[in-house]
Image (cartoon, rainbow, N blue to C red; front, side, top):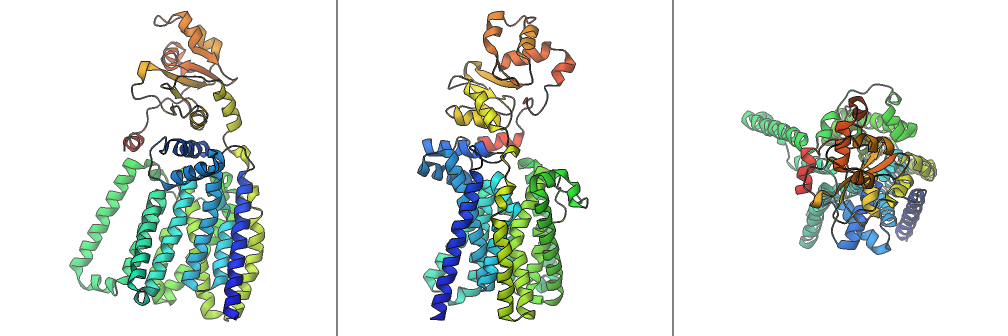
Length: 505
């Protein structure tokens, strides 16, 4: 009877936490009428395209776009669908951490602590605002690890059908984690490697005794490492600028503090110190836990560049992945040193302030830090081009245009392909309509009627201009003035090779 009451109470508490966390997250996203974060409208236009046409506007394998599209289809509003998808997958990631820790520790109190630490995490909260695909990848990663632990502990006692079912589930979650984001793909491969290594008894001893096998293994590792670096260089060069020694204190890194807040920096220190201290302790004192200790240098990597976009993202991933690792290390330590009832009491006591912090997380989202979407919406409202046209505009503005203008193409790079009738236009930032027209009057290629018709002001900051006229203007303008337009707000470079390859694929 006590067990039934205990399980019922656990399910009720879990259900309440799931509902409360969803409500907190969704209400946070409703602080803005627009999609949240730097890529908000990119997710929205992908969701809109999938809901309306059954395919993505920009073909991609990452699962987040399809999930956002499904939510958009259900609720009939792509922006609302993206926010609902974001809130649901955020809650499900917390739930996945709960299941992972419950499977690993068999202690519901530590599982609840992991759930709440994830829900209250500044790094995880801000990840959901900006990087939905990354968040979804972490959700599948946690579930994948949970199933591996379950199989490791129960495989022999499972029936044949159950073995097939859970093995298939592990494979499916591995694939979904890998498809969702490159970062979680790397984590999944690492977890699978640790799992296979743990199943190979005395593998290190055998390698050491048979030198040829050791040399072969190291050679394979070296080839994979070099191949991995070359792959990253070709397909995701941003990773190459993501490594750097930390300059302490971390608050010296302005990008880190502005993106994660001071609370996020405190959180980084908390998990890094806990994990490294716990990992070293277990590597020394517990032989059976040394494989787990191997995960610490990989998960809690010390050389991510906090001043780069990708390095910052990796630190956020480290914190989220590090939550179940840190809680597990604390449980392992408490299990051998502290009586069971006292463990649960301490854990329950810790859950209360963390639950309170969860309700404060909406304050982390400040819509003013998003791109000025309302301004962009007003700008594109007055831009009317043909369905086969191409518009060039800077990042953010291009996605808003595509979303509100019937999914018409808008590129944040120079056009590097042919467009029918050369119907290519540009939203140029910081150019004065009168000045541009005056300079173009000196052109021998274009007559005044065309100039007057194809150059117009759409706001105080932007003009709409035919691309061929813009390029002619830059040639005729004073060199020093023309060079000032080579900035982020005025796309002036061709797409990198790795982006073109991705679009072709």
